[in-house]
Image 1 (spheres, rainbow, N blue to C red):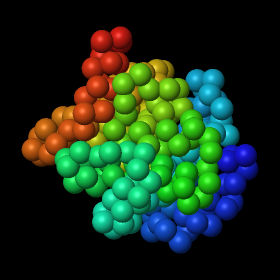
Image 2: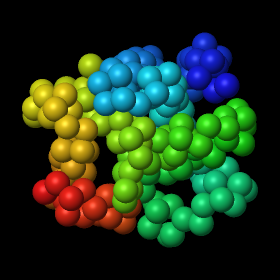
Image 3: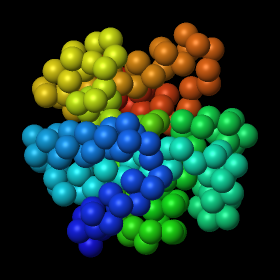
Image 4: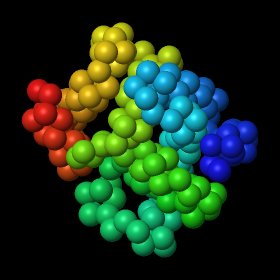
Length: 192
Protein backbone atom coordinates (compact mmCIF):
# COMPACT_ATOMS: atom_id res chain seq x y z
CA UNK A 1 0.00 0.00 0.00
CA UNK A 2 1.39 3.40 -1.02
CA UNK A 3 0.66 5.03 2.34
CA UNK A 4 3.05 2.58 4.00
CA UNK A 5 5.98 3.82 1.88
CA UNK A 6 6.44 7.27 3.45
CA UNK A 7 9.97 6.58 4.78
CA UNK A 8 11.00 5.33 1.32
CA UNK A 9 9.47 8.44 -0.26
CA UNK A 10 11.19 10.67 2.28
CA UNK A 11 14.58 9.16 1.38
CA UNK A 12 13.90 9.80 -2.32
CA UNK A 13 12.79 13.37 -1.62
CA UNK A 14 16.00 14.06 0.32
CA UNK A 15 17.90 13.37 -2.91
CA UNK A 16 15.61 15.37 -5.19
CA UNK A 17 14.60 18.47 -3.20
CA UNK A 18 16.38 21.33 -1.50
CA UNK A 19 16.19 21.32 2.32
CA UNK A 20 13.68 24.18 2.15
CA UNK A 21 11.45 22.35 -0.35
CA UNK A 22 11.73 19.16 1.69
CA UNK A 23 10.56 21.09 4.75
CA UNK A 24 7.70 22.49 2.65
CA UNK A 25 6.70 18.97 1.58
CA UNK A 26 6.64 17.78 5.18
CA UNK A 27 4.59 20.83 6.18
CA UNK A 28 2.12 20.17 3.36
CA UNK A 29 1.84 16.53 4.47
CA UNK A 30 1.06 17.62 8.04
CA UNK A 31 -1.49 20.21 6.89
CA UNK A 32 -3.07 17.70 4.50
CA UNK A 33 -3.44 15.19 7.33
CA UNK A 34 -5.05 17.87 9.51
CA UNK A 35 -7.49 18.90 6.77
CA UNK A 36 -8.32 15.26 6.00
CA UNK A 37 -9.16 14.61 9.64
CA UNK A 38 -11.25 17.79 9.76
CA UNK A 39 -13.20 17.14 6.56
CA UNK A 40 -13.54 13.34 6.67
CA UNK A 41 -10.95 12.14 4.16
CA UNK A 42 -8.35 9.40 4.51
CA UNK A 43 -5.63 11.06 6.63
CA UNK A 44 -2.95 8.55 5.60
CA UNK A 45 -3.56 9.14 1.89
CA UNK A 46 -3.59 12.89 2.47
CA UNK A 47 -0.28 12.74 4.33
CA UNK A 48 1.37 10.65 1.61
CA UNK A 49 0.04 12.82 -1.23
CA UNK A 50 1.18 15.96 0.58
CA UNK A 51 4.61 14.51 1.18
CA UNK A 52 5.24 13.58 -2.47
CA UNK A 53 3.35 16.37 -4.24
CA UNK A 54 6.52 18.27 -5.29
CA UNK A 55 8.75 15.27 -6.08
CA UNK A 56 9.61 16.64 -9.55
CA UNK A 57 9.79 20.33 -8.56
CA UNK A 58 13.45 20.81 -9.44
CA UNK A 59 13.82 18.57 -12.47
CA UNK A 60 14.84 20.31 -15.71
CA UNK A 61 11.81 21.02 -17.93
CA UNK A 62 13.29 18.98 -20.80
CA UNK A 63 13.59 15.93 -18.52
CA UNK A 64 10.01 16.34 -17.32
CA UNK A 65 8.74 16.66 -20.88
CA UNK A 66 10.68 13.58 -21.96
CA UNK A 67 9.17 11.56 -19.10
CA UNK A 68 5.65 12.78 -19.90
CA UNK A 69 6.03 12.17 -23.63
CA UNK A 70 7.49 8.68 -23.16
CA UNK A 71 4.61 7.73 -20.89
CA UNK A 72 2.01 8.96 -23.39
CA UNK A 73 -0.87 9.35 -20.90
CA UNK A 74 -0.94 13.15 -21.19
CA UNK A 75 -0.93 15.04 -24.47
CA UNK A 76 0.15 18.52 -23.41
CA UNK A 77 -0.58 21.58 -25.51
CA UNK A 78 2.32 23.80 -26.52
CA UNK A 79 1.28 26.28 -23.85
CA UNK A 80 1.13 23.58 -21.16
CA UNK A 81 4.62 22.47 -22.14
CA UNK A 82 5.89 25.97 -21.29
CA UNK A 83 4.21 26.41 -17.88
CA UNK A 84 6.87 24.83 -15.66
CA UNK A 85 4.89 25.23 -12.44
CA UNK A 86 2.21 23.03 -13.97
CA UNK A 87 4.71 20.74 -15.64
CA UNK A 88 6.18 19.51 -12.35
CA UNK A 89 2.73 18.36 -11.19
CA UNK A 90 2.08 16.34 -14.35
CA UNK A 91 5.62 14.95 -14.34
CA UNK A 92 5.24 14.15 -10.64
CA UNK A 93 2.18 11.99 -11.31
CA UNK A 94 3.94 10.21 -14.19
CA UNK A 95 7.16 9.67 -12.20
CA UNK A 96 5.30 8.34 -9.17
CA UNK A 97 3.24 5.96 -11.31
CA UNK A 98 5.90 4.76 -13.76
CA UNK A 99 9.16 4.93 -11.80
CA UNK A 100 8.06 4.41 -8.19
CA UNK A 101 5.07 2.14 -8.81
CA UNK A 102 2.51 4.24 -6.94
CA UNK A 103 -0.89 2.74 -7.74
CA UNK A 104 -3.35 4.73 -5.63
CA UNK A 105 -5.31 6.76 -8.20
CA UNK A 106 -6.53 9.27 -5.61
CA UNK A 107 -2.97 10.09 -4.54
CA UNK A 108 -1.78 10.29 -8.14
CA UNK A 109 -4.61 12.62 -9.12
CA UNK A 110 -4.04 14.84 -6.08
CA UNK A 111 -0.38 15.24 -7.12
CA UNK A 112 -1.38 15.85 -10.75
CA UNK A 113 -3.80 18.69 -9.92
CA UNK A 114 -2.10 20.31 -6.92
CA UNK A 115 -1.05 23.38 -8.92
CA UNK A 116 -3.99 23.94 -11.25
CA UNK A 117 -6.98 22.36 -9.61
CA UNK A 118 -9.61 21.01 -11.96
CA UNK A 119 -13.34 21.01 -12.49
CA UNK A 120 -15.24 18.97 -9.88
CA UNK A 121 -12.22 18.21 -7.69
CA UNK A 122 -12.33 15.24 -5.32
CA UNK A 123 -12.03 15.77 -1.59
CA UNK A 124 -8.38 14.66 -1.60
CA UNK A 125 -7.53 16.90 -4.57
CA UNK A 126 -8.97 19.91 -2.72
CA UNK A 127 -7.13 18.96 0.45
CA UNK A 128 -3.73 18.81 -1.27
CA UNK A 129 -4.43 22.01 -3.22
CA UNK A 130 -5.36 23.88 -0.03
CA UNK A 131 -2.63 22.26 2.09
CA UNK A 132 -0.04 23.48 -0.42
CA UNK A 133 -1.37 27.03 0.03
CA UNK A 134 -1.76 26.96 3.81
CA UNK A 135 1.11 24.82 5.11
CA UNK A 136 3.03 26.10 8.12
CA UNK A 137 5.99 27.25 6.03
CA UNK A 138 3.91 29.50 3.78
CA UNK A 139 4.35 33.22 4.36
CA UNK A 140 2.57 35.48 1.92
CA UNK A 141 0.09 38.32 2.33
CA UNK A 142 -3.29 37.00 3.53
CA UNK A 143 -1.98 33.50 4.35
CA UNK A 144 -3.57 33.66 7.80
CA UNK A 145 -6.93 34.55 6.27
CA UNK A 146 -6.64 31.65 3.83
CA UNK A 147 -5.78 29.34 6.73
CA UNK A 148 -8.83 30.57 8.66
CA UNK A 149 -11.02 30.02 5.60
CA UNK A 150 -9.61 26.48 5.26
CA UNK A 151 -10.67 25.73 8.83
CA UNK A 152 -14.25 26.65 7.96
CA UNK A 153 -14.73 25.50 4.35
CA UNK A 154 -12.46 23.55 2.05
CA UNK A 155 -14.48 24.69 -0.96
CA UNK A 156 -14.17 28.38 -0.07
CA UNK A 157 -10.44 28.00 0.58
CA UNK A 158 -10.02 26.23 -2.77
CA UNK A 159 -11.96 28.99 -4.53
CA UNK A 160 -9.85 31.62 -2.81
CA UNK A 161 -6.64 29.88 -3.92
CA UNK A 162 -7.87 29.60 -7.49
CA UNK A 163 -8.87 33.26 -7.48
CA UNK A 164 -5.44 34.25 -6.19
CA UNK A 165 -3.73 32.20 -8.92
CA UNK A 166 -5.87 33.72 -11.66
CA UNK A 167 -5.41 37.30 -10.39
CA UNK A 168 -1.68 36.86 -9.84
CA UNK A 169 -1.06 35.38 -13.28
CA UNK A 170 -3.26 37.97 -15.00
CA UNK A 171 -1.45 40.79 -13.18
CA UNK A 172 1.90 39.41 -14.42
CA UNK A 173 0.58 38.80 -17.95
CA UNK A 174 1.17 35.07 -17.50
CA UNK A 175 -1.03 32.36 -19.00
CA UNK A 176 -3.74 30.82 -16.85
CA UNK A 177 -4.11 27.07 -17.18
CA UNK A 178 -7.52 26.06 -18.50
CA UNK A 179 -7.95 23.58 -15.61
CA UNK A 180 -7.65 26.49 -13.17
CA UNK A 181 -10.31 28.46 -15.01
CA UNK A 182 -12.64 25.45 -15.11
CA UNK A 183 -12.04 24.72 -11.42
CA UNK A 184 -12.76 28.34 -10.51
CA UNK A 185 -15.93 28.50 -12.60
CA UNK A 186 -17.17 25.17 -11.21
CA UNK A 187 -16.75 26.25 -7.59
CA UNK A 188 -17.86 29.86 -8.12
CA UNK A 189 -21.10 28.64 -9.67
CA UNK A 190 -21.78 26.41 -6.67
CA UNK A 191 -20.65 28.49 -3.71
CA UNK A 192 -19.84 31.94 -5.11
